[in-house]
Amino acid sequence: MTTNQVLVRQLDTIDIGTVTAIDEKITGSYHPEEWERRIGYYLRRDPDAALVAVIDGEVVGFMLGEVRSGEFGLMEPTGWIEVLGVDPDHQGSSIGRRLAESLLEHFKSRGAVKVRTLVDEGMGDIAGFFESLGFEPAPLRPFVKLL
Image (cartoon, rainbow, N blue to C red):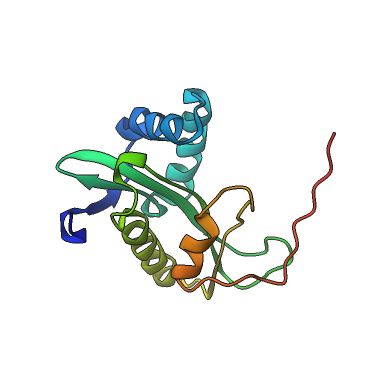
């Protein structure tokens, strides 16, 4: 499959079911209410930063993000990639890369000077994916407290 067959477009509310199904294939968990809430948030905040990848009319991947300033004391406009999902049947076909390229271009057009994301070390190859896009580890450290 060539990357020319992948169309990246803005996510629409009609895509929520497909996004939920892709996430279920990846994680083994079904959370439609979570995806409806999450997608609704991004469509209200920055609809051009909520993207899907489509092949032959079928949604095969998604990426959500936004540009924010003032997060964690970082005052410069910063693009944040929150989540990426690619249907396991289509992984390895540059779908994630096409989504990321589109989102990075959008962030740049919105004045972002940096793009950040968080990667859980237990998530397999996702760190390698972001490194292949030119991301590098940052001096920010996440902290967590169990309640």
